[in-house]
Amino acid sequence: MEPVSKVTGRMAPLDRADVDTDQIIPKQFLKRIERTGYGPFLFYDWRANGDFVLDKPEHKGASVMVTGENFGCGSSREHAPWAIKDAGFDAIISPTFADIFRANAYKTGILAVTLPDRQVRHLIDLATEDPSIEITVDLEAKEVRGDGFAYSFEIDSFARDMLLNGLDEITLRLQPALTGVLLGPSGAGKSTLINRIVGEDVMRTRMIHSSGEGRHMTSHRQLVLLPGGGMIIDTPGLREAQLWEGEDGLANLFEDIEELALTCRFTNCAHNTEPGCAIKAAIADGTLEVVRFNSYRKLQRELRAIAAKSDARIRIEERKKWKQIAMAGKAKARP
Image (cartoon, rainbow, N blue to C red; front, side, top):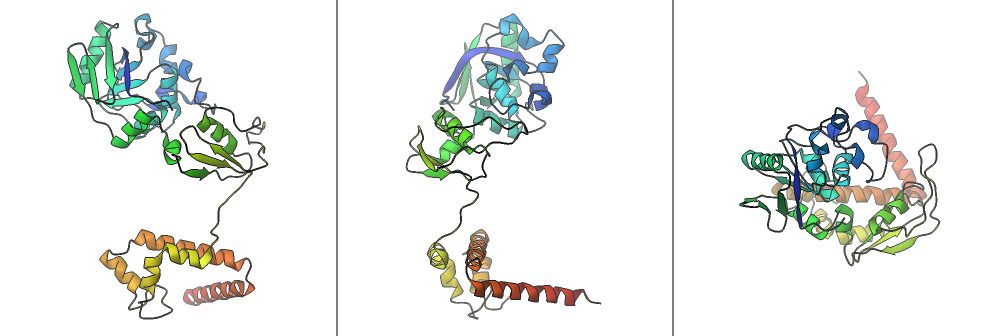
């Protein structure tokens, strides 16, 4: 995504409220997987009726859309901002936006700016009376200004930083000194995604099968340097990543929990219903977050499952445990 700091251009007035995403881009045009090529289908049904405001010659080439409240309501389709961007609009001004549409607009590089009803009405009237008038939507100054007026607006600071720096959610996580790895079965589109992130075809891909499924292509692991300085690894059908260092690694990562467990009343405390459990006490008084403890328990289970694959003793213990659980369940179910 290219950085966006300001948009200067003419306005296109769409004086309608509650414009939903199906009106923006009808569902019959959603079969493409690319982000481009949707512009001609923007507001397709309205344009088919004729005399649509955005088709008027005086509004051709406008880069700022000014519209009514609750713009982008309805389904959460990302194709709506794609179509708007592809049609040449770099900014949209409205009293309110649907939350999901606004988030998708930011991801597409569109400035979705909210202003009070009175100010939006002023802009719509200006564009209707004199379509040649230009305004500037300044993201750095957080201001919409034109000849004789300047309107301030607020925007989420995280979204503002992403737009100003040209970052999407993926590249934001792959900054210099950070490396990501794509996991997924063969034909899932990992190489295609890397090409999209890099901005050029650095990985070979194949056409999608007639069934709609992807085709296997990558047969090696490759580290790709990204334009922003981060790196990403493409893998040949790697489905999952597993823990490696075992119990020692878990103890180092959750040293606080391991130390608390040593102070429980019972050495074999399972931290469930046992009295004198230091873990339960720490969660109750807020010194230990329950989310952190749940992560610890989850990793414990994963490590035991990995160990059971190579240790017959652990497999026998697991079968015995689940057999006892099943028998206890049957006993409770008896009348």
